Length: 88
Image (cartoon, rainbow, N blue to C red; front, side, top):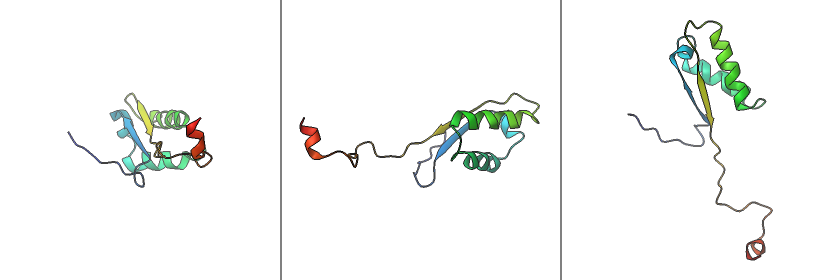
């Protein structure tokens, strides 16, 4: 078992996939594929496109899960909240 500390500046997502994907795509190619699409597409559309792309050349089944991290601090008050809002 390996443990990896995740750092917001370095880790935006985790891709979990079966060997059918990794048989036809390098880790870096998969990362680049996802990063190119993140600004404009939803995660489910990205992973579907990734699986379909790999499925064109893979001789195995291809399954993948894309987990995106939300690094926003949920404990800090929103900019629009005022201290008096908490007393109501």
